Amino acid sequence: MKIFRAIAAVAFLAAISAGSVHAQPRTTTPAGPAPTTTQTAGIPEAKIALVNTDEFADEKTGITRLVSAMKRVDGEFQPRRTELATLQQQIEKGTADLTKAAPVQDQKVTQQQSDKLELMKTDLKRRGEDAQAAYQKRLQEVLGPVYDDIGKALDAYAKAHGITLILDVTKVQGIVSASESLDITKPFITEFNSKNPATASLTPRE
Image 1: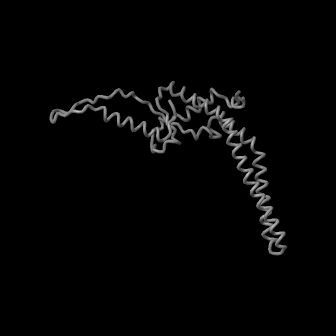
Image 2: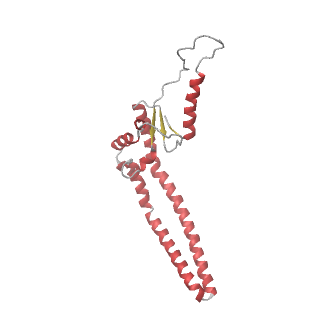
Image 3: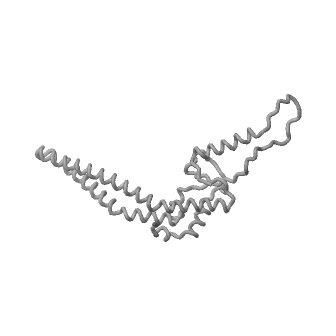
């Protein structure tokens, strides 16, 4: 069992529909009573459930291990965010000061200050890109194992409840309406949290 993306889900549903049509026996007899039963080509009965993976990261009602891991990474990068914010403020102040001083000061001084601001902007852009790349890499390192455990837990949950297919509503755009009984998000989160305390995310894997 896997969480299918939109294309896979649509293909799956289309295959069920197509299978039901082609499973009907063909006949060339022009007359006669219509058959009272239709044969199927051995299509297994499917139990489908829905899950909203966006809710996993909800700070109040989500998966505590995942939320804890995300906060951990955010805390690690807080100094960088502060540094970038400070540099941005310096650029904004310098730009405002230059706008006021330019009309009354030497043009060469204005050019020097303008060049300095451009260097600061280039530096801010480079640091921001480096920080973003490092942040994404760190997220994968810390959250990867957690998401692996969530995937395994979803498989186990599906088997325990006789579910043959779980669709992620954040990926399948074709779902416009569904019974609430199909949504396993909250019960799954509750079960996962009871078996996987948040402190488990603080233990690094080898």
